Amino acid sequence: MKKILVTGGAGFLGSHLCERLLKDGNDILCVDNFFTGSKINIAHLMASPYFELMRHDVTFPLYVEVDQIYNLACPASPVHYQFDPVQTTKTSVHGAINMLGLAKRLKARIFQASTSEVYGDPEVHPQPEDYWGRVNPVGIRSCYDEGKRCAETLFFDYHRQHKLEIKVARIFNTYGPRMHPNDGRVVSNFIVQALKGEELTIFGSGQQTRSFCYVDDLIEGFVRLMNSRAELTGPLNLGNPGEFTMLELAEKIMKLTNSKSKLAFKPLPQDDPKQRQPSINLAKHELAWEPSVSLEDGLKETISYFRNTLR
Ligand code: NAD
Ligand code: UDP
Ligand code: UDP
Image (cartoon, rainbow, N blue to C red; front, side, top):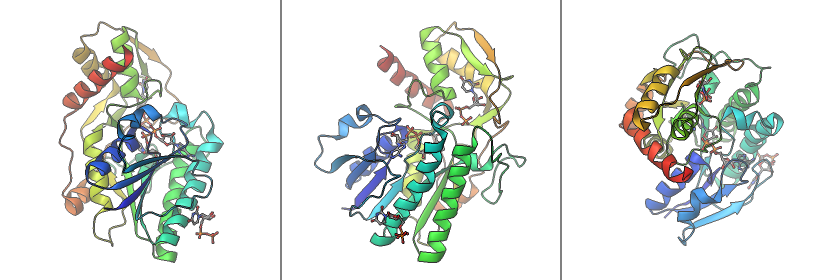
């Protein structure tokens, strides 16, 4: 039995990861400051003697004893990370320093939830790991994008300087049950709007693309990467290569919810990437991993979750 720390464990991805690691027979320490996460996401795990919840902000030092660390703490949706951008950068950078310091003292393996946002608005398509990206350093998305880029730098410097075993995953847009209904991400927005019979808000022309991965597929990738050979540091893309325009996504969600909602076109937010699709050759080769849940099946699960929570 391993003692595993999950920071951001009460969030969307963190709660699924805690659930999975607990099911695999590990002892979990979930650390969260509940900025975007919630106790409801992990309420079903609280009865287990092998699940422990700690309210803590990762921008402050943390002294605990664990064997592995998954560092997920950070707001992930533009609405949330732009609410307090300074705190967002602090969470990524100070949070990474503290968790790396902890990993160094414990000689523990550490996983970083990085993001496809490190590629910015990319000129290379699909995005392979060796593409350095095109990120605006001073825009409204920069607190998140540059914070995550700096966290990657810290991970690689702790690896080179202190011989830490690091695992850096670049996560592409992921969706599923326990997404925050008001976090402004496109999948949750469209589903909630469709179920409430409200207009679906399309930003810009709706021709921009994203590639959507179902949460269960992603979590499988996390666990495989964490337990891969020591030399495999990443960065490694995890995402579903299926690429869709926002208009296609809206149509699919309308169909699956039998919604009669109309579309409302809104201005495109600043620096919104035009396209995004992961190249997952590295994950296929190194982890024998690829997503297995189709967008349609994943959306059905997510819609059914929102039907129950919106009731
Ligand atoms: P989320 O907002 O649901 O979860 C983030 C969690 O971190 C929340 O529980 C929040 O309360 C907690 N948190 C935030 N700041 C903290 C702090 N200073 N100290 C302690 N806890 C803090 O978002 P998510 O979608 O679950 O994302 C989890 C991680 O995965 C994030 O690091 C995010 O950047 C990364 N990621 C997610 C996606 C995606 O599509 N969901 C894509 C790329 C990267
Ligand atoms: N740290 C922590 N928990 C630990 C060990 C370190 O939170 O168990 C923090 C500590 O506050 C420090 C940071 O991690 O600021 C980086 O630690 P490191 O040992 O790399 O740096 P140093 O302490 O030498 O500044
Ligand atoms: N988007 C949209 N309508 C919404 C919310 C988002 O058209 O109600 C668009 C947004 O402009 C972006 C895409 O959907 O082009 C994905 O947005 P999200 O915030 O989910 O993720 P990110 O931009 O971080 O990839």
